[in-house]
Image 1: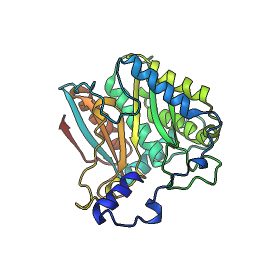
Image 2: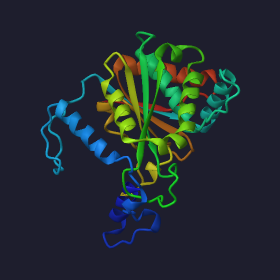
Image 3: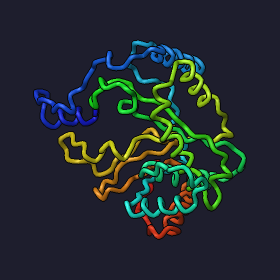
Length: 302
């Protein structure tokens, strides 16, 4: 909402009256922080910065200076999934499922993340017994049992969830189905889990994510295909290409709607050269296996 409101003001001028859906709601009483999550997160942030020897002023908006440049051999690429490819992947997942008694939540987001996670794990190769973490943010506004939270609420109302899997389980023929089942289970549980989070559990979850070593493959998901990035117009016309610039630091993946308006999904990744080549091969082959056809993509060096 912030980007859309900002773009609307830039396009129409500072005297422009924002439409209701883009007018921010700053009503902090809409969210009752009975577990004092705000303090828990602030304290944890302070600990992280201290551990990284970063000197900062909590009231300063200055950009951190301790930012290392990305390695010279990184490549950035965008891969596109058509609605047809997503549908065929969904059918394959259902045919390979291991627990037929449980209904799966196979949204386009879940299917896409399952495919990309498997391709990333295969592209890295290495030990099959290593842990893999897939992390994503959850918009809690519609999931909390609080009717007072409007869609235009402007505040931190996000949660974090993640799955942990053994790399070997994602490398097999049914790896996409395994990943989809795990993601589906977590997504279905978010609705109840969000309201049960307390400060102790939140800090423990953050601690686990921060403490994993380099032997663990961890990647986060940035964005969503429902955010409408390609509809944001700052007065220069709609975007031709959307990219998440932080991927060269986080090594995560970005998700957005297809810029061509086809209803598909764009996935952005940043990998070293040989891993990018392997990722592309696995990605394209996965779509060929389900008859989804090849997908367009483009790659550039950072």
